[in-house]
Length: 313
Image 1 (tube, rainbow, N blue to C red):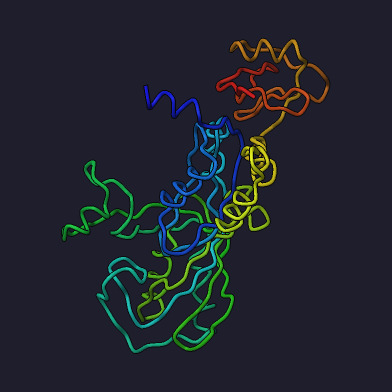
Image 2 (image 1 turned 120 degrees about the vertical axis):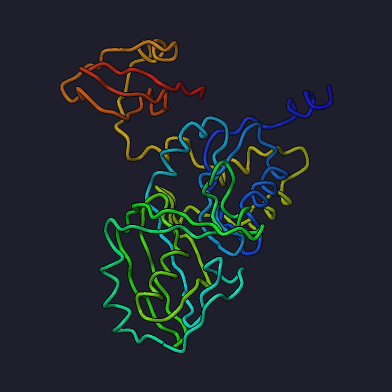
């Protein structure tokens, strides 16, 4: 009974809050703090960040959870610092040093290898990663002292730029990459290619799919706004100020406006024939909308929209 009462007291929120995750806490800890402020009925995050990483952590509320895959599959941009001369077993500052080198690459040498790390490349993920090995997370096996050998897999790095070299020991990069890319592994492999060792000492995610720095909200901003709510005022004011519409995650999908009558059919799971000269004949991923409000996700075949997931908005 107590659990059912708690659920009734939760707020029906639909949309995206793009958190600027602070340093030193896990993505789940950050999500927990948001839950205690907004008390949503349903919420999840689109991809995690390591505790020592900061930046873009999109949180999906309510009906927005149906669009998480479109955000997670989108491009990501990271700015990260690599410190030369040491390699760790985690490929960042959290782990133990496993190799050292006195070699310090100069900026010209660094720029010369960047082309080899762009495009479709093969990458061996870090041993301390969430990849499953025989049903267990690789980082759990590594923490237990087991030797973890992960196979190389293809990743897509669209852009890798050297931003600056603050001193001979450090280099700052910006990478635009696809799903499944480990920046820590890029740092490790660049160090080895340069005849030295390297690990990530600072990492910030600047973009995930359609969400970037202009969309980010800090925990402090949200906490301060919550504290300033007037007596009797609900979280509606916070939602209005900080939560983006569900459709923000579907910018790259084909949108097909439909009539009120067709929207009603689609919500019942029925396919509808799209009207108008500009209506697409075929599309693997699209969404139907009425009066600008998303109705359903689906596909288009022979001019008919077939819903796969209906929105309750």
